[in-house]
Length: 574
Image (tube, rainbow, N blue to C red):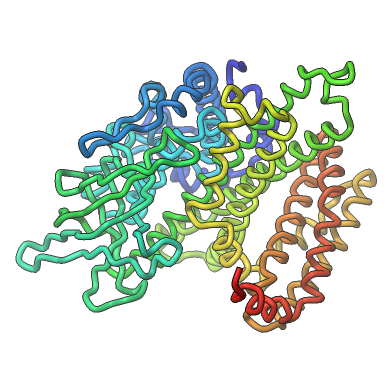
Protein backbone atom coordinates (compact mmCIF):
# COMPACT_ATOMS: atom_id res chain seq x y z
CA UNK A 1 0.00 0.00 0.00
CA UNK A 2 1.12 3.57 -0.71
CA UNK A 3 2.76 5.56 2.08
CA UNK A 4 0.99 8.84 1.28
CA UNK A 5 -2.38 9.22 -0.46
CA UNK A 6 -1.57 12.75 -1.61
CA UNK A 7 2.01 12.30 -2.79
CA UNK A 8 1.10 9.22 -4.85
CA UNK A 9 -1.66 11.13 -6.69
CA UNK A 10 0.00 13.13 -9.46
CA UNK A 11 -3.27 14.49 -10.80
CA UNK A 12 -4.30 15.88 -7.41
CA UNK A 13 -0.89 17.56 -7.19
CA UNK A 14 -1.44 18.93 -10.70
CA UNK A 15 -4.76 20.42 -9.58
CA UNK A 16 -3.15 22.18 -6.61
CA UNK A 17 -0.32 23.47 -8.80
CA UNK A 18 -2.74 24.90 -11.39
CA UNK A 19 -5.14 26.34 -8.80
CA UNK A 20 -5.36 30.12 -8.79
CA UNK A 21 -7.15 31.48 -5.72
CA UNK A 22 -4.85 34.44 -5.14
CA UNK A 23 -7.67 37.00 -4.94
CA UNK A 24 -9.80 34.72 -2.76
CA UNK A 25 -7.03 33.99 -0.27
CA UNK A 26 -6.05 37.65 0.02
CA UNK A 27 -9.64 38.53 0.94
CA UNK A 28 -9.99 35.59 3.35
CA UNK A 29 -6.69 36.46 5.03
CA UNK A 30 -7.66 40.15 5.22
CA UNK A 31 -4.66 41.23 3.19
CA UNK A 32 -2.54 38.71 5.15
CA UNK A 33 -3.01 40.67 8.37
CA UNK A 34 -3.73 37.44 10.25
CA UNK A 35 -0.03 36.58 9.99
CA UNK A 36 0.81 39.16 12.64
CA UNK A 37 -1.56 37.51 15.16
CA UNK A 38 -1.37 33.81 14.27
CA UNK A 39 2.04 32.23 13.62
CA UNK A 40 0.60 29.59 11.26
CA UNK A 41 -1.24 32.11 9.07
CA UNK A 42 0.28 32.73 5.62
CA UNK A 43 2.25 35.88 4.80
CA UNK A 44 1.46 35.78 1.07
CA UNK A 45 -0.17 33.55 -1.54
CA UNK A 46 2.90 31.39 -2.07
CA UNK A 47 3.04 30.80 1.67
CA UNK A 48 -0.66 29.86 1.64
CA UNK A 49 -0.14 27.33 -1.16
CA UNK A 50 2.76 25.83 0.78
CA UNK A 51 0.51 25.52 3.85
CA UNK A 52 -2.19 23.78 1.81
CA UNK A 53 0.34 21.38 0.35
CA UNK A 54 1.65 20.55 3.82
CA UNK A 55 -1.85 19.88 5.13
CA UNK A 56 -2.60 17.58 2.20
CA UNK A 57 0.67 15.73 2.74
CA UNK A 58 -0.08 15.34 6.45
CA UNK A 59 -3.55 14.02 5.75
CA UNK A 60 -2.23 11.81 2.95
CA UNK A 61 0.19 10.12 5.32
CA UNK A 62 -2.45 9.55 8.00
CA UNK A 63 -4.81 8.09 5.41
CA UNK A 64 -2.22 5.72 3.99
CA UNK A 65 -0.65 4.57 7.26
CA UNK A 66 -3.49 4.75 9.79
CA UNK A 67 -6.90 4.84 8.12
CA UNK A 68 -6.77 2.75 4.92
CA UNK A 69 -5.11 -0.32 6.51
CA UNK A 70 -8.08 -0.62 8.89
CA UNK A 71 -10.84 0.42 6.48
CA UNK A 72 -12.12 -3.14 6.00
CA UNK A 73 -12.17 -3.54 9.79
CA UNK A 74 -14.17 -0.33 10.21
CA UNK A 75 -16.64 -1.58 7.60
CA UNK A 76 -16.92 -5.02 9.18
CA UNK A 77 -17.49 -3.80 12.75
CA UNK A 78 -19.48 -0.69 11.78
CA UNK A 79 -21.10 1.80 14.13
CA UNK A 80 -22.85 0.09 17.05
CA UNK A 81 -26.05 1.07 18.88
CA UNK A 82 -26.77 0.07 22.47
CA UNK A 83 -28.83 1.57 25.30
CA UNK A 84 -29.68 4.65 23.30
CA UNK A 85 -26.10 5.56 22.42
CA UNK A 86 -23.89 5.07 19.36
CA UNK A 87 -20.31 3.83 19.46
CA UNK A 88 -17.96 4.19 16.51
CA UNK A 89 -15.99 1.15 15.36
CA UNK A 90 -12.57 0.85 17.00
CA UNK A 91 -10.82 1.62 13.69
CA UNK A 92 -12.98 4.73 13.26
CA UNK A 93 -12.12 5.92 16.76
CA UNK A 94 -8.40 5.48 16.03
CA UNK A 95 -8.77 7.41 12.77
CA UNK A 96 -10.59 10.29 14.46
CA UNK A 97 -7.93 10.47 17.15
CA UNK A 98 -5.17 10.63 14.51
CA UNK A 99 -6.98 13.46 12.71
CA UNK A 100 -7.45 15.32 16.00
CA UNK A 101 -3.79 14.95 16.90
CA UNK A 102 -2.87 16.40 13.51
CA UNK A 103 -5.27 19.34 14.18
CA UNK A 104 -7.24 18.71 10.99
CA UNK A 105 -10.78 18.78 12.43
CA UNK A 106 -11.54 22.48 11.91
CA UNK A 107 -9.45 23.50 8.94
CA UNK A 108 -12.09 25.71 7.27
CA UNK A 109 -12.78 27.82 10.37
CA UNK A 110 -11.15 31.25 10.76
CA UNK A 111 -7.88 31.59 12.64
CA UNK A 112 -9.56 33.32 15.60
CA UNK A 113 -11.53 30.16 16.36
CA UNK A 114 -8.57 27.81 16.10
CA UNK A 115 -9.07 26.91 12.44
CA UNK A 116 -6.82 27.28 9.40
CA UNK A 117 -9.06 29.44 7.20
CA UNK A 118 -8.90 26.96 4.32
CA UNK A 119 -10.89 27.58 1.11
CA UNK A 120 -13.62 25.15 0.04
CA UNK A 121 -11.58 24.02 -2.98
CA UNK A 122 -8.73 22.80 -0.81
CA UNK A 123 -11.09 21.24 1.69
CA UNK A 124 -12.68 19.23 -1.14
CA UNK A 125 -9.23 17.89 -1.96
CA UNK A 126 -8.83 16.78 1.65
CA UNK A 127 -12.24 15.08 1.60
CA UNK A 128 -11.27 13.22 -1.56
CA UNK A 129 -8.04 11.93 0.01
CA UNK A 130 -9.86 10.82 3.15
CA UNK A 131 -12.69 9.15 1.21
CA UNK A 132 -10.22 7.15 -0.83
CA UNK A 133 -8.94 5.74 2.46
CA UNK A 134 -12.32 5.05 4.14
CA UNK A 135 -15.55 6.44 2.73
CA UNK A 136 -17.64 6.17 5.90
CA UNK A 137 -15.20 8.29 7.90
CA UNK A 138 -15.85 11.19 5.53
CA UNK A 139 -19.31 11.71 7.05
CA UNK A 140 -17.65 12.61 10.34
CA UNK A 141 -14.66 14.56 9.02
CA UNK A 142 -16.62 15.99 6.07
CA UNK A 143 -19.32 17.51 8.27
CA UNK A 144 -17.04 20.41 9.06
CA UNK A 145 -19.57 22.25 6.90
CA UNK A 146 -21.72 22.34 10.06
CA UNK A 147 -19.11 24.47 11.80
CA UNK A 148 -18.69 26.64 8.72
CA UNK A 149 -22.43 27.35 8.65
CA UNK A 150 -22.38 28.34 12.33
CA UNK A 151 -19.49 30.66 11.52
CA UNK A 152 -21.39 32.16 8.59
CA UNK A 153 -24.82 32.58 10.16
CA UNK A 154 -24.44 32.37 13.94
CA UNK A 155 -24.02 35.33 16.28
CA UNK A 156 -20.72 36.20 17.96
CA UNK A 157 -21.60 34.55 21.28
CA UNK A 158 -22.62 31.30 19.58
CA UNK A 159 -19.47 31.22 17.49
CA UNK A 160 -17.18 31.96 20.44
CA UNK A 161 -18.80 29.20 22.49
CA UNK A 162 -19.00 26.45 19.87
CA UNK A 163 -16.43 26.89 17.11
CA UNK A 164 -13.19 26.46 19.11
CA UNK A 165 -14.54 23.09 20.27
CA UNK A 166 -14.94 22.04 16.63
CA UNK A 167 -11.37 23.12 15.88
CA UNK A 168 -10.02 21.10 18.80
CA UNK A 169 -12.01 18.05 17.69
CA UNK A 170 -13.97 18.02 20.95
CA UNK A 171 -17.33 18.00 19.15
CA UNK A 172 -18.68 16.78 15.82
CA UNK A 173 -21.69 18.04 13.89
CA UNK A 174 -24.86 16.75 12.27
CA UNK A 175 -27.13 18.36 9.68
CA UNK A 176 -30.65 17.47 10.86
CA UNK A 177 -33.13 18.11 8.08
CA UNK A 178 -34.92 14.94 6.90
CA UNK A 179 -38.09 13.56 8.48
CA UNK A 180 -40.11 10.38 7.82
CA UNK A 181 -42.50 12.39 5.60
CA UNK A 182 -40.10 15.13 4.48
CA UNK A 183 -37.16 13.91 2.45
CA UNK A 184 -36.63 15.74 -0.82
CA UNK A 185 -39.62 17.98 0.03
CA UNK A 186 -38.05 19.79 2.98
CA UNK A 187 -40.69 22.51 2.80
CA UNK A 188 -43.06 20.08 4.51
CA UNK A 189 -40.90 19.61 7.65
CA UNK A 190 -43.11 19.31 10.75
CA UNK A 191 -40.69 19.29 13.69
CA UNK A 192 -41.97 22.14 15.87
CA UNK A 193 -39.94 24.96 17.35
CA UNK A 194 -41.77 26.76 20.17
CA UNK A 195 -40.67 30.03 21.71
CA UNK A 196 -41.24 30.52 25.44
CA UNK A 197 -42.14 34.20 25.48
CA UNK A 198 -41.37 34.50 29.19
CA UNK A 199 -37.79 33.22 28.96
CA UNK A 200 -37.02 33.90 25.29
CA UNK A 201 -35.92 30.26 24.93
CA UNK A 202 -36.76 27.91 22.05
CA UNK A 203 -37.66 24.22 22.39
CA UNK A 204 -37.98 21.54 19.70
CA UNK A 205 -40.37 18.61 19.41
CA UNK A 206 -40.43 16.10 16.58
CA UNK A 207 -38.80 13.16 14.83
CA UNK A 208 -35.94 13.26 12.31
CA UNK A 209 -34.83 10.30 10.18
CA UNK A 210 -31.80 9.31 8.08
CA UNK A 211 -29.56 11.72 9.99
CA UNK A 212 -25.92 11.18 9.10
CA UNK A 213 -23.78 11.17 12.25
CA UNK A 214 -26.87 11.96 14.30
CA UNK A 215 -24.99 10.95 17.43
CA UNK A 216 -22.90 14.13 17.10
CA UNK A 217 -22.69 16.65 19.91
CA UNK A 218 -23.88 19.67 17.87
CA UNK A 219 -26.95 19.60 15.62
CA UNK A 220 -28.22 22.14 13.13
CA UNK A 221 -31.95 21.40 13.00
CA UNK A 222 -34.54 22.59 10.49
CA UNK A 223 -37.83 23.14 12.31
CA UNK A 224 -41.16 24.92 11.91
CA UNK A 225 -41.03 28.11 13.97
CA UNK A 226 -44.15 29.83 12.62
CA UNK A 227 -47.41 28.41 13.95
CA UNK A 228 -50.00 27.72 11.26
CA UNK A 229 -47.47 27.74 8.41
CA UNK A 230 -47.21 24.83 5.99
CA UNK A 231 -44.39 25.76 3.61
CA UNK A 232 -40.72 26.77 3.54
CA UNK A 233 -41.48 30.28 4.76
CA UNK A 234 -42.36 28.93 8.20
CA UNK A 235 -39.03 27.18 8.77
CA UNK A 236 -36.05 28.33 10.80
CA UNK A 237 -32.67 26.82 11.66
CA UNK A 238 -31.69 25.95 15.23
CA UNK A 239 -28.54 24.91 17.01
CA UNK A 240 -28.91 22.06 19.49
CA UNK A 241 -26.21 20.81 21.83
CA UNK A 242 -27.33 17.23 22.33
CA UNK A 243 -28.52 16.36 25.84
CA UNK A 244 -30.88 13.86 27.50
CA UNK A 245 -33.90 15.37 25.71
CA UNK A 246 -32.52 14.12 22.38
CA UNK A 247 -33.26 10.45 22.06
CA UNK A 248 -31.51 8.31 19.45
CA UNK A 249 -34.22 5.79 18.58
CA UNK A 250 -32.07 3.56 16.39
CA UNK A 251 -29.42 3.49 13.69
CA UNK A 252 -30.08 2.19 10.19
CA UNK A 253 -28.63 -1.04 8.79
CA UNK A 254 -27.25 0.10 5.47
CA UNK A 255 -25.78 -1.32 2.28
CA UNK A 256 -22.55 0.65 2.68
CA UNK A 257 -20.55 3.22 4.67
CA UNK A 258 -21.06 1.03 7.74
CA UNK A 259 -18.69 3.07 9.90
CA UNK A 260 -21.02 6.06 9.51
CA UNK A 261 -24.02 6.00 11.89
CA UNK A 262 -27.32 7.02 10.29
CA UNK A 263 -29.72 7.82 13.10
CA UNK A 264 -33.39 8.33 13.84
CA UNK A 265 -33.77 11.12 16.40
CA UNK A 266 -36.57 12.24 18.70
CA UNK A 267 -36.51 15.79 20.10
CA UNK A 268 -38.55 16.00 23.30
CA UNK A 269 -38.86 19.62 24.40
CA UNK A 270 -35.19 20.05 23.52
CA UNK A 271 -33.54 23.42 24.27
CA UNK A 272 -32.47 25.11 21.04
CA UNK A 273 -30.91 28.35 19.87
CA UNK A 274 -32.08 30.23 16.79
CA UNK A 275 -29.43 30.55 14.08
CA UNK A 276 -29.69 33.85 12.22
CA UNK A 277 -33.22 35.10 11.49
CA UNK A 278 -36.59 33.39 11.70
CA UNK A 279 -38.10 32.08 8.44
CA UNK A 280 -34.69 31.86 6.72
CA UNK A 281 -34.13 28.26 7.77
CA UNK A 282 -34.61 26.45 4.48
CA UNK A 283 -34.23 28.89 1.63
CA UNK A 284 -31.17 30.69 3.00
CA UNK A 285 -29.36 28.70 5.68
CA UNK A 286 -30.14 25.06 4.92
CA UNK A 287 -29.62 25.57 1.19
CA UNK A 288 -26.19 27.09 1.87
CA UNK A 289 -25.41 24.21 4.21
CA UNK A 290 -26.54 21.62 1.67
CA UNK A 291 -24.56 23.22 -1.13
CA UNK A 292 -21.40 22.90 0.94
CA UNK A 293 -22.30 19.32 1.76
CA UNK A 294 -22.87 18.60 -1.94
CA UNK A 295 -19.31 19.62 -2.71
CA UNK A 296 -18.13 17.31 0.07
CA UNK A 297 -20.20 14.39 -1.27
CA UNK A 298 -18.84 15.06 -4.77
CA UNK A 299 -15.34 14.79 -3.32
CA UNK A 300 -16.36 11.65 -1.42
CA UNK A 301 -17.55 10.02 -4.64
CA UNK A 302 -14.33 11.04 -6.37
CA UNK A 303 -12.23 9.52 -3.58
CA UNK A 304 -14.14 6.23 -3.71
CA UNK A 305 -13.78 6.15 -7.50
CA UNK A 306 -10.03 6.75 -7.20
CA UNK A 307 -9.74 3.88 -4.73
CA UNK A 308 -11.77 1.55 -6.96
CA UNK A 309 -9.74 2.48 -10.04
CA UNK A 310 -6.47 1.74 -8.24
CA UNK A 311 -7.78 -1.65 -7.11
CA UNK A 312 -8.83 -2.45 -10.69
CA UNK A 313 -5.55 -1.25 -12.18
CA UNK A 314 -3.52 -3.30 -9.70
CA UNK A 315 -5.61 -6.40 -10.32
CA UNK A 316 -5.41 -5.97 -14.11
CA UNK A 317 -1.63 -5.83 -13.89
CA UNK A 318 -1.38 -8.93 -11.71
CA UNK A 319 -4.09 -11.14 -13.18
CA UNK A 320 -2.81 -13.35 -15.98
CA UNK A 321 -5.11 -14.72 -18.67
CA UNK A 322 -4.15 -16.04 -22.11
CA UNK A 323 -0.50 -15.85 -20.96
CA UNK A 324 -0.49 -12.08 -20.38
CA UNK A 325 -1.81 -9.53 -17.87
CA UNK A 326 -5.46 -8.73 -18.54
CA UNK A 327 -4.47 -5.06 -18.61
CA UNK A 328 -3.03 -5.79 -22.09
CA UNK A 329 -6.38 -7.00 -23.39
CA UNK A 330 -7.99 -4.16 -25.41
CA UNK A 331 -11.40 -4.75 -23.82
CA UNK A 332 -9.91 -4.27 -20.34
CA UNK A 333 -7.54 -1.43 -21.22
CA UNK A 334 -10.46 0.49 -22.68
CA UNK A 335 -12.32 0.19 -19.37
CA UNK A 336 -9.26 1.49 -17.49
CA UNK A 337 -8.87 4.42 -19.88
CA UNK A 338 -12.56 5.27 -19.54
CA UNK A 339 -12.30 5.22 -15.76
CA UNK A 340 -9.16 7.37 -15.75
CA UNK A 341 -10.77 9.96 -18.02
CA UNK A 342 -13.93 10.09 -15.90
CA UNK A 343 -11.96 10.55 -12.68
CA UNK A 344 -9.66 13.31 -13.91
CA UNK A 345 -12.51 15.15 -15.64
CA UNK A 346 -14.48 15.07 -12.40
CA UNK A 347 -11.50 16.29 -10.41
CA UNK A 348 -11.16 19.24 -12.80
CA UNK A 349 -14.89 19.98 -12.56
CA UNK A 350 -14.83 19.84 -8.75
CA UNK A 351 -11.84 22.18 -8.64
CA UNK A 352 -13.55 24.61 -11.03
CA UNK A 353 -16.76 24.51 -8.99
CA UNK A 354 -14.92 24.95 -5.70
CA UNK A 355 -13.08 27.96 -7.11
CA UNK A 356 -16.35 29.69 -7.98
CA UNK A 357 -17.82 28.89 -4.56
CA UNK A 358 -14.70 30.35 -2.94
CA UNK A 359 -14.96 33.46 -5.13
CA UNK A 360 -18.61 33.88 -4.19
CA UNK A 361 -17.85 33.72 -0.47
CA UNK A 362 -14.82 36.00 -0.77
CA UNK A 363 -16.72 38.63 -2.76
CA UNK A 364 -19.61 38.47 -0.29
CA UNK A 365 -17.11 39.11 2.50
CA UNK A 366 -15.50 41.97 0.60
CA UNK A 367 -18.85 43.63 -0.12
CA UNK A 368 -19.95 43.24 3.52
CA UNK A 369 -16.71 44.80 4.79
CA UNK A 370 -16.78 47.73 2.35
CA UNK A 371 -18.65 50.92 3.18
CA UNK A 372 -19.11 51.72 -0.53
CA UNK A 373 -18.55 48.54 -2.57
CA UNK A 374 -17.08 49.06 -6.03
CA UNK A 375 -19.65 48.32 -8.80
CA UNK A 376 -17.04 46.07 -10.43
CA UNK A 377 -16.89 44.03 -7.23
CA UNK A 378 -20.66 43.70 -7.19
CA UNK A 379 -20.56 42.49 -10.79
CA UNK A 380 -17.94 39.89 -9.91
CA UNK A 381 -20.13 38.79 -7.02
CA UNK A 382 -23.10 38.41 -9.37
CA UNK A 383 -21.11 36.30 -11.86
CA UNK A 384 -19.63 34.13 -9.12
CA UNK A 385 -23.09 33.53 -7.67
CA UNK A 386 -24.45 32.40 -11.03
CA UNK A 387 -21.50 30.05 -11.66
CA UNK A 388 -21.58 28.58 -8.16
CA UNK A 389 -25.33 27.99 -8.30
CA UNK A 390 -25.02 26.26 -11.68
CA UNK A 391 -21.88 24.20 -11.17
CA UNK A 392 -22.64 22.95 -7.64
CA UNK A 393 -25.61 20.74 -8.63
CA UNK A 394 -23.81 19.86 -11.87
CA UNK A 395 -20.73 18.51 -10.09
CA UNK A 396 -22.80 16.72 -7.44
CA UNK A 397 -24.77 15.00 -10.19
CA UNK A 398 -21.81 14.15 -12.38
CA UNK A 399 -19.32 13.14 -9.67
CA UNK A 400 -21.68 10.76 -7.91
CA UNK A 401 -23.00 9.16 -11.10
CA UNK A 402 -19.40 8.91 -12.32
CA UNK A 403 -18.38 7.20 -9.09
CA UNK A 404 -21.08 4.59 -9.56
CA UNK A 405 -19.95 3.95 -13.15
CA UNK A 406 -16.30 3.63 -12.16
CA UNK A 407 -17.02 1.24 -9.28
CA UNK A 408 -19.18 -0.86 -11.62
CA UNK A 409 -16.32 -1.10 -14.12
CA UNK A 410 -13.79 -1.80 -11.36
CA UNK A 411 -15.81 -4.79 -10.22
CA UNK A 412 -16.21 -5.92 -13.83
CA UNK A 413 -12.42 -5.93 -14.26
CA UNK A 414 -12.08 -8.08 -11.14
CA UNK A 415 -14.61 -10.56 -12.47
CA UNK A 416 -16.00 -13.07 -9.97
CA UNK A 417 -13.46 -12.35 -7.23
CA UNK A 418 -14.61 -8.72 -7.09
CA UNK A 419 -17.96 -9.96 -5.81
CA UNK A 420 -16.24 -11.49 -2.77
CA UNK A 421 -15.81 -9.72 0.55
CA UNK A 422 -12.06 -10.42 0.54
CA UNK A 423 -11.51 -7.79 -2.17
CA UNK A 424 -11.75 -4.05 -1.42
CA UNK A 425 -13.64 -3.34 -4.63
CA UNK A 426 -16.72 -5.03 -3.14
CA UNK A 427 -16.71 -2.43 -0.33
CA UNK A 428 -16.21 0.45 -2.74
CA UNK A 429 -19.11 -0.84 -4.84
CA UNK A 430 -21.37 -0.74 -1.76
CA UNK A 431 -20.07 2.56 -0.39
CA UNK A 432 -20.46 4.55 -3.61
CA UNK A 433 -24.17 3.86 -3.98
CA UNK A 434 -25.28 6.36 -1.35
CA UNK A 435 -23.49 9.31 -2.93
CA UNK A 436 -26.06 9.93 -5.66
CA UNK A 437 -28.87 9.61 -3.12
CA UNK A 438 -28.01 11.64 -0.03
CA UNK A 439 -27.61 15.42 0.09
CA UNK A 440 -30.08 15.58 -2.79
CA UNK A 441 -30.62 12.78 -5.29
CA UNK A 442 -29.29 13.03 -8.83
CA UNK A 443 -32.81 13.87 -9.98
CA UNK A 444 -32.93 16.87 -7.62
CA UNK A 445 -29.52 18.04 -8.88
CA UNK A 446 -30.88 17.93 -12.43
CA UNK A 447 -33.83 20.08 -11.34
CA UNK A 448 -31.48 22.58 -9.68
CA UNK A 449 -29.09 22.73 -12.64
CA UNK A 450 -31.66 22.90 -15.43
CA UNK A 451 -33.24 26.09 -14.11
CA UNK A 452 -29.87 27.82 -14.48
CA UNK A 453 -28.80 26.19 -17.74
CA UNK A 454 -32.01 27.25 -19.49
CA UNK A 455 -30.98 30.82 -18.70
CA UNK A 456 -27.64 30.28 -20.52
CA UNK A 457 -25.81 30.58 -17.21
CA UNK A 458 -22.58 28.96 -18.42
CA UNK A 459 -22.37 30.72 -21.80
CA UNK A 460 -19.87 33.17 -20.32
CA UNK A 461 -17.52 30.33 -19.41
CA UNK A 462 -17.98 28.48 -22.69
CA UNK A 463 -17.27 31.64 -24.73
CA UNK A 464 -14.22 32.49 -22.64
CA UNK A 465 -12.77 29.01 -23.04
CA UNK A 466 -13.53 28.95 -26.78
CA UNK A 467 -11.67 32.24 -27.29
CA UNK A 468 -8.45 31.06 -25.62
CA UNK A 469 -5.33 30.06 -27.56
CA UNK A 470 -4.65 26.32 -27.44
CA UNK A 471 -1.99 26.17 -30.16
CA UNK A 472 -2.02 24.27 -33.46
CA UNK A 473 -1.69 20.82 -31.91
CA UNK A 474 -4.93 21.18 -29.93
CA UNK A 475 -6.78 23.18 -32.60
CA UNK A 476 -8.76 20.16 -33.91
CA UNK A 477 -10.13 19.41 -30.43
CA UNK A 478 -10.85 23.09 -29.88
CA UNK A 479 -12.81 23.22 -33.14
CA UNK A 480 -14.92 20.23 -32.08
CA UNK A 481 -15.73 21.89 -28.79
CA UNK A 482 -16.55 25.24 -30.38
CA UNK A 483 -19.05 23.33 -32.51
CA UNK A 484 -20.35 21.60 -29.35
CA UNK A 485 -20.81 25.02 -27.71
CA UNK A 486 -23.01 26.19 -30.56
CA UNK A 487 -24.99 22.96 -30.49
CA UNK A 488 -25.51 23.27 -26.74
CA UNK A 489 -26.81 26.85 -27.00
CA UNK A 490 -29.15 25.92 -29.82
CA UNK A 491 -30.39 22.85 -27.93
CA UNK A 492 -30.94 24.95 -24.79
CA UNK A 493 -33.21 27.31 -26.71
CA UNK A 494 -35.06 24.38 -28.28
CA UNK A 495 -35.79 22.81 -24.89
CA UNK A 496 -36.69 26.17 -23.36
CA UNK A 497 -39.39 26.61 -26.01
CA UNK A 498 -41.14 23.38 -24.96
CA UNK A 499 -43.83 22.98 -22.33
CA UNK A 500 -42.92 22.52 -18.68
CA UNK A 501 -43.59 18.77 -18.66
CA UNK A 502 -41.35 18.25 -21.70
CA UNK A 503 -38.60 20.38 -20.16
CA UNK A 504 -38.71 18.34 -16.97
CA UNK A 505 -38.75 15.03 -18.86
CA UNK A 506 -35.73 15.87 -21.03
CA UNK A 507 -33.80 17.95 -18.47
CA UNK A 508 -31.29 15.16 -17.84
CA UNK A 509 -30.24 15.24 -21.50
CA UNK A 510 -29.32 18.93 -21.35
CA UNK A 511 -27.55 18.54 -18.00
CA UNK A 512 -25.50 15.65 -19.42
CA UNK A 513 -24.61 17.78 -22.45
CA UNK A 514 -23.45 20.59 -20.17
CA UNK A 515 -21.33 18.27 -18.04
CA UNK A 516 -19.61 16.61 -20.99
CA UNK A 517 -18.86 19.94 -22.70
CA UNK A 518 -17.61 21.68 -19.53
CA UNK A 519 -15.43 18.70 -18.63
CA UNK A 520 -14.00 18.53 -22.14
CA UNK A 521 -13.03 22.21 -22.05
CA UNK A 522 -11.43 21.80 -18.63
CA UNK A 523 -9.36 18.87 -19.87
CA UNK A 524 -8.41 20.82 -22.99
CA UNK A 525 -7.23 23.70 -20.82
CA UNK A 526 -5.09 21.22 -18.86
CA UNK A 527 -3.73 19.77 -22.11
CA UNK A 528 -1.71 22.96 -22.67
CA UNK A 529 0.51 22.01 -19.75
CA UNK A 530 0.86 18.23 -20.00
CA UNK A 531 1.33 15.69 -22.78
CA UNK A 532 -0.52 13.10 -20.72
CA UNK A 533 -3.44 15.52 -20.36
CA UNK A 534 -3.49 15.98 -24.14
CA UNK A 535 -3.95 12.26 -24.59
CA UNK A 536 -6.59 12.18 -21.86
CA UNK A 537 -8.56 15.06 -23.41
CA UNK A 538 -8.54 13.20 -26.73
CA UNK A 539 -9.81 10.02 -25.07
CA UNK A 540 -12.51 11.79 -23.02
CA UNK A 541 -13.84 13.77 -25.97
CA UNK A 542 -13.72 10.66 -28.12
CA UNK A 543 -15.83 8.86 -25.54
CA UNK A 544 -18.39 11.61 -25.02
CA UNK A 545 -18.68 13.62 -28.24
CA UNK A 546 -21.23 11.10 -29.46
CA UNK A 547 -23.11 11.45 -26.16
CA UNK A 548 -23.30 15.23 -26.69
CA UNK A 549 -24.87 14.72 -30.11
CA UNK A 550 -27.23 11.99 -28.93
CA UNK A 551 -28.50 14.23 -26.11
CA UNK A 552 -28.97 17.12 -28.55
CA UNK A 553 -30.90 14.91 -30.96
CA UNK A 554 -33.09 13.64 -28.14
CA UNK A 555 -34.05 17.21 -27.23
CA UNK A 556 -34.48 18.32 -30.83
CA UNK A 557 -37.00 15.49 -31.29
CA UNK A 558 -38.65 16.04 -27.91
CA UNK A 559 -42.42 15.89 -27.83
CA UNK A 560 -45.19 14.82 -25.47
CA UNK A 561 -45.41 11.20 -26.61
CA UNK A 562 -43.30 9.81 -23.72
CA UNK A 563 -45.58 11.62 -21.27
CA UNK A 564 -48.66 10.14 -22.88
CA UNK A 565 -47.09 6.69 -22.95
CA UNK A 566 -46.18 7.10 -19.29
CA UNK A 567 -49.83 7.27 -18.31
CA UNK A 568 -50.69 4.21 -20.41
CA UNK A 569 -47.79 2.06 -19.29
CA UNK A 570 -47.38 2.97 -15.64
CA UNK A 571 -51.08 2.85 -14.84
CA UNK A 572 -51.47 -0.63 -16.31
CA UNK A 573 -51.69 -3.70 -14.09
CA UNK A 574 -48.56 -5.82 -13.88
